[in-house]
Length: 612
Image 1 (tube, rainbow, N blue to C red):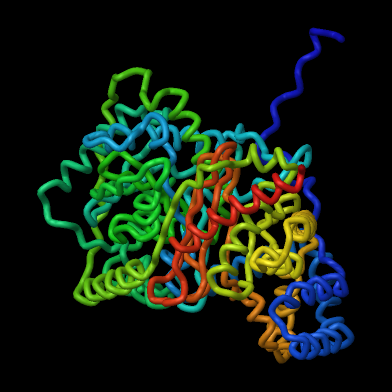
Image 2: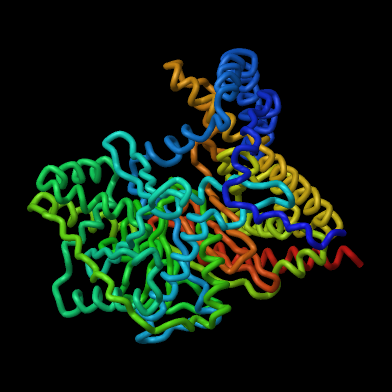
């Protein structure tokens, strides 16, 4: 081989975007047959027969017509779902997003360099901010490697939404404002907003074309802290972002009408790289128990975070970290990628800055002070009140299951994600004596602007296996056979969903075409079994594998009598966050986790004994 041949240039972040395939539309027949399989576990013979009739009528009649219209839309759109999904899943939703829709999570740095430690907050926040700015720069200069599934490039568009992005409330529907530009596209905002004690400050993170160093950032943060210490709390305008969406939109319009300067402040926050919250609480956590940080991240002080911002970095007084993000502009994997990068960088440098201590004469942070009147003050009080009530109702546990992890499961030639999903279902059925409709996220990023598809893990095979496990007269051989059948079905559903062959988004598309054309809602969507099996966002168990890294997240349950169940899988452990509502008497997050642990042990035992 010729040594003088130059290596291929490194791939740029967005270079594969134009070549990605369009999102496919599955066949109507296949989607409806998958739908019938999915509702089967929740129906009596009679109910199932009624649903079968509804589905057949739909398939032969209006369904066919809607499907044709959907195919037509897909011919002219590389992603027929994209705008619809954004509207229906996020922007048209009127309930407060900060606790119900946002996702949040704990920083994993306490597992190595950054154990909780008094007096370390600002030092560490300046280092973590510096690494975050390096990541922004990687995306801005398009040097972040495009992600792949094996050799297939994945859509990277969501990475444009991590920085300089904000949701803006509207009376009927919100919008997303994105100010990010790559270097080749033009100038990009480079200021950060810092929130502390109900007050807001901003500074430019770039000076003379150079990103500020950690000592320079530390000086800026120290200035903010000094301004706030011993002073009364600010107005806490950011609490308004935790309000019901229409109400927040109206207050926002009022804010702008009092003083045009308020509009400039809003624009500064919206266009900022991200928000850094200097939080005065100390949510002590450990590698075994992340409950306090996870709870603080999801339900913490609303006056020091901007709920609509795509990325809020939370810095706690004991030197630990968390994040909370608006879910509309991207899915959790974008944040996971950033936090995994931070974790690796912080670990590699032992959490220290080894560069120059010199500090340039950088402009001091500028305080952003809204002009408020009595109406705004009263709206802030109302927002805090409703936020506090909901926050107190949310139960979160976040524990490490350390008996075994990916290694032991793979040794049994089983898929780790499916293993966790089945253990969770067995746990639920033991507790609630019935199958629970369940949602697992599948990613469709093989396709242009692909986001997610639903996998419904509560299959008939999974239910049959759970029954076998709970039936004392059933022997290990039959239980194992039922378990393998459940694994097989789940694995296939996941592969199909990632290939754009799930059915939930397809049905949503048909429903929305009917809505757009002003047609009556088809009976399929009015059938009680449709929502009982989870349709229309009614899943009792809402779950997601956050990945195989050190980064975990949490979100609220989809329904009042449901659970959120999020987990990360490591070689030797599985760390899980479970959420539930305290006001629901029948659910309990801690009990579900304990049952899950028992199920994990039983499954591994079953997989072991049967090999003999």
